[in-house]
Length: 294
Length: 294
Image (tube, rainbow over all chains, first blue to last red):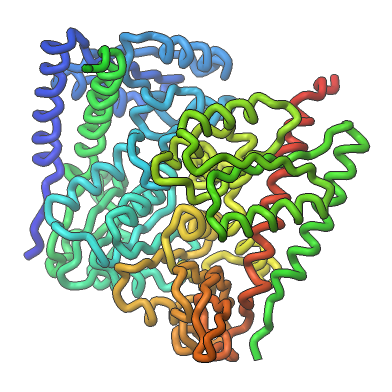
């Protein structure tokens, strides 16, 4: 039987550690870590995500500010808010919930967030630091969560074959770069990839982030592989209800060494990593304000 | 017989086009495209590269400024020069020749160059834009040259399997990102990769950038593959002389569809792309200064 790697339990540990760091920062530096969440419009899925993030923030003692803007808000209006939050020393993390309405250019907004407050890790400077392995940047939450899960079960990544399914900027590409940095041989696949089952079958590590329900079947997975399922897909059931399934047919993967479930796999890690990034940003800002010790 | 893709001939065409753009910019906007080249110390290979770049710049009408700093120059001294060049509106491209002496942090210097003048494409903002496929950034010269060569012989990259050998920030990683952007399935391999010959043999496109003489043997190459050889290695010959060879054993690759030679392959393309980036930067700066047409 494959080991089921419970992301929710690992996330709990991450949150405990974040909570301790938040307390220490408050006690030692008098700084209250603070995350500003910006939501434009009323996308129902975004509403749910934002609520979850805020609840988790409160649970670890991070102050959470909510900014709700009308669906018709102009790009400049949103930019003005971002600039205000950039300039506010009490704000350590800024999260603009995606997707944005179509009249707002997402890359302009993401590029306007101060890199040191960009807790989603989407600013070009943070993406660039991740790509070059320079370090010192904020890393996107979902791929960071994936790699933290992998680190629970893999000691030495060197030379392992990793196959990333999906090449999004939010998951696939940064996950590939993080694995490359750990000396894996990395293949990035996507909708145009030919012979994906064979490619997946060659992998020691599969990160499935295609957004396609049960895409990865049991016979795509090599015995002993470690499988991280990033997909969160709602499917209709025959009885008229619906269910959440991942990108991997977990029930067919008994021969994997380790596999993450959906739900309670990568999802909780994403939120935990957002708060980890927030306290990290708050600590870095507190350090930058301290006088250097002689 | 494999088609030998003469990079020097393609580079000539690129340079001709750059030359025309330089003239047009001068005639229309009164702007003389200008590249500032900074060399710290006296590394003999760097001296050769810098001389070649300057000669090529002159050949297309790009003004070339040379700044030579002593090996003992401080990091701050170099930073001061970079800031001066950033602020100089007559300078459109800034190239700090690598490697830098060990007492200077390369990432600090590269991160200090104004992104819009970063004609090497190494600034985190440009790396980030390349990674996300956002566009609008300057792309590192060697991988850009590789892809321009590939575009001479491949119409549709979608779904082709590309194997990149080497994961440097200068060639391997940006080349992989450019190919991913063109919808290839991309595998990045490196010194820790196991079973590299088999992986290479699966590729429709090989980019060899390992810096290892004749690493890629004939039986690593699938019949009909396109092979781009980035390696420039000097090896000792039995008669006491030396020769320049690539990372690919070209003489064993008759069964490839297309292969680039070394020398006269990727090398000339790298320099041509540097000057392409320079005129691109100059054009963008001239546009930014023009009053918007109502």
